[in-house]
Figure (cartoon, rainbow, N blue to C red):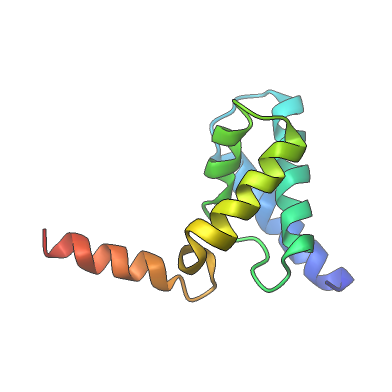
Length: 101
């Protein structure tokens, strides 16, 4: 991931951190920032996708940062791979399925 990509990811992460309701807990915000940026660097083909912040904040309630990183990787890579692509095919399929329920 190049410097421009890292800056773009950090900018998007910062926007979404403000949308995540963790109050003014700077330790929690810092942990979220580190996990999300680390994941984006680890999986540059996925990068950062909106919505990951909510998964990370929930995981941090139960796991430390390293465990949260690996759980996020498992979720995005193995459990819901099509939900966190830039095309978000999994989300489109879910929405179409819900229309028919």
